[in-house]
Image (cartoon, rainbow, N blue to C red; front, top):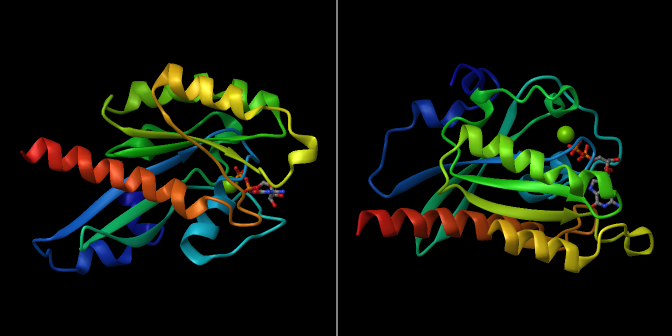
Length: 193
Ligand code: GDP
Ligand code: MG
């Protein structure tokens, strides 16, 4: 929470809690340069940055999504370069209810790393975490290095949702985040019953 408040979590602390308000923490993980930061900026601000530089430290953005007429706040965390040094801290994962595991469809090694990211996620988070496998950069079909089938197979094996996205041309970005948010919401509703 120290990181969260210093890095821009203004709203949550000050606002009075309303009965029907939800805050879901979701983490973006995956190798460096797969497009995590651009997926987040596309989702939260509808922006794409060709030369996005890795900032040091942890950052998140809050996006409000309406589900079943309820305002749900998705607090989406971006590793902001930590993953380069394999130093994603446990604070990053703490309290996460959802995760987007991102690879680059033009870079096989980033797909092969997903197992390691899954393992890391499982050491920090509950098994009930909503997990989505995201094959990003699907606009680069001509230099594809990971087939859709390979993505689907891994997702089935590991019981993940699966989607291919492009932060560049906006394909499926909204959908990727919304599926995870909806899944968290329905997990939670199930627990309440
Ligand atoms: P991160 O290190 O995972 O946060 O990756 P970034 O978001 O910084 O993106 C790394 C590089 O990939 C940047 O040069 C982006 O412009 C580029 N990039 C990100 N998403 C896409 C995409 O969907 N399509 C294409 N063609 N390039 C992308
Ligand atoms: Mg980044």
